[in-house]
Length: 398
Image (cartoon, rainbow, N blue to C red; front, side, top):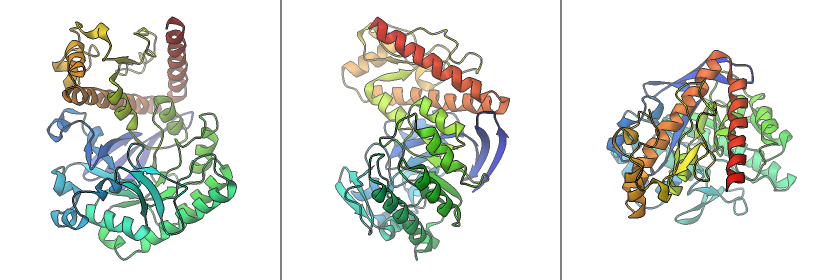
């Protein structure tokens, strides 16, 4: 894996290129959230309909495989790439996702991290985690972390940092680490304390890692206190290595991360939108048009998405978004997707996730262009203010 920075913008954003798995992927980039290595709804044969190579990054949690197929079988098949038939995709492993593998800080101890999963509460030790990584052979993987929410005591917070750094050493020096392959991303925690965030980042930066995975966000901290935490971390890290983050979902939150110098983001936002029947509609084809106020608030939404379960779309024969190049908008209408939701057909989620993924990847492309043009700060300000105004207008008309 190689990483290089190509542009900086006023406001802190940076654009780079991540070379991994035979692909050159521009950053900031989106890691597509998966369950057991595949998107939640999109079938493998339709992955090729998404923008390439932006859609090549797939994120998964090894804990997804706690039930079903054994690690030995996965290893014998040659890892996830071979087992899933996705040899041209890039897999990034993280212990936690924000959907089905949630950290449970109260049950964690010095032996390992605890997670709430569909299989129940699991205590994962570093050696167990490395056995998973060795069997699955991802292109990139984050080390085990003891993530805690924002409200824990200072003592518990310090303990989480100490454990995370110790587990990092255990992961990279274990006997199976040599067989794991892939680029190692050192996990960084520290809760809502700037001092602990700095301490963890500085300790992890001393280790021989290829990048950094910033954890512990989306666990109770406010958006107002987040910039200081993010800046404390990134200012303590070397600039020539990529930074990944888990827990920032909304576009405004992603822009916070970009402003702090984060390069890779997860996509649980797409999953939650799709599950609720929402389709993204904010303009993203051109920076000058993005959030220019051309599109009005629709049916109680915030003007950036529409609810395709709403009855108003029962006879709407237009695509989700005029001009969108995704498979769904090129072939289907709002009325058809509304019908699919009404009869509880899974195809509704498939078509909607295709559109939302395509659209959100476009949002990241717009962000990269803004950084390259040196207008990221203005773009971010306009984006956030316009979205806030639309939400306010929707609330008044409700």
